Length: 323
Image (cartoon, rainbow, N blue to C red; front, side, top):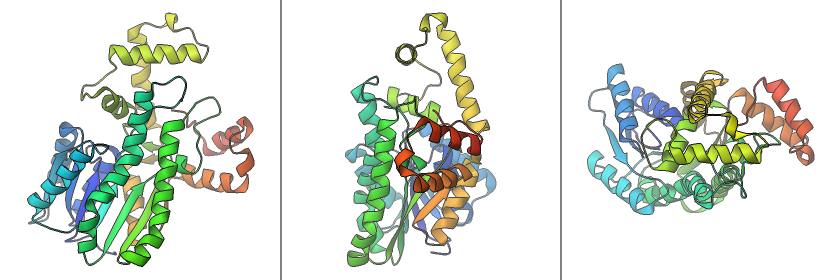
């Protein structure tokens, strides 16, 4: 699929980050887009940015509030998008929505762990199931599933548990690769790509907390501050040295630096992804850090989780990927 003009795309997580930039760039190329997100405010901002850049005549963008881990929401998203766009088919499905969290099987609550896993993996599965008939109805189609460099390296450092997110992203990678034979036999006009970004400058830190807390409000709530204090204790730090305001400020600064210090911006990531789709690439590595760790893990898989391995990666990448 070399040209997106006149096509119809579905993008999950279109209210911020890479999802927003995918929507903006698809629209700029003349692609009709249906997006979903849990944040109506975020999607409204995405639409405003698209409109400010100028919409091609007749192009349609629709926004749908949906939790991708909830099948009822996903099916309503599909049906509403089809009705509003007036179509029974789509050409592109970007399973992009995701959050972080649930790093530890011991320290983190089961609800947080499963919320992260169910969005990052379940959202890919449920949306693929829901939109598959519309993809099959198109003359050509492409599914683009966002995994992560944590889909082949389950770590953000030797002292930082990272189980829910990494497990989900490994599942996304395996699912996407397994679809190749399935589609070759049963739907040969559908292609697939797995996206594996490194550190991308997005608001995933704040957005993940909002999703976990079922809110669209900025900042940490009392329960989240208490959870941070518990994690400090588990890491051998004394939480009594920090006021709630201190914790709020530290969180805000980390979130700011996560965006400003990233080697790849969300807009750059979206461009890499769309170029990868046009080139019909299965694996789309996004960012120099993702390319680096891919080479390192392949070269030394037995030691990929040792502290020395991580230190070599951090030194060569020039950044500290711990979340």
